[in-house]
Image (cartoon, rainbow, N blue to C red; front, side, top):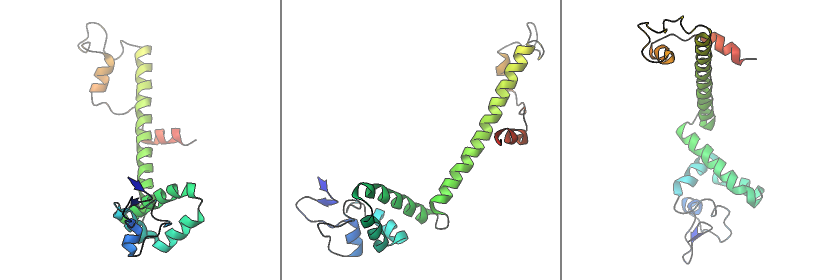
Length: 164
């Protein structure tokens, strides 16, 4: 059973003290957040922020906020290791671009659905789906969606719909 990053009985140094090659004191500020079995966690944080800065940040925070602060530092440090220039901002930017693209695609799909519903309810026989027509096998929507029909709205039109 672990307690404060150390095994009971044997005083095992936390990952921070192990990396810094120092003795791990009973009141080590790093021990609860950087256990000995997760050395890479502290190594990345140390590489990006420096042990002294992390120590200062943790000591300035109330204990109930330190866990969240360490989680944030670990996330940012891991992102910086993967992308030294942009860090987590690059990941956030990429996700935002994906959201924008998906919102545009959703708007196009919703507009097509509305257009299909309106055109089907206004004149169901207009598109050649009446009884006895060669296209009457299957539902009208499956015929329209199955074909490679081009989108009803242009991308510029959808973008103008979203920018109020």
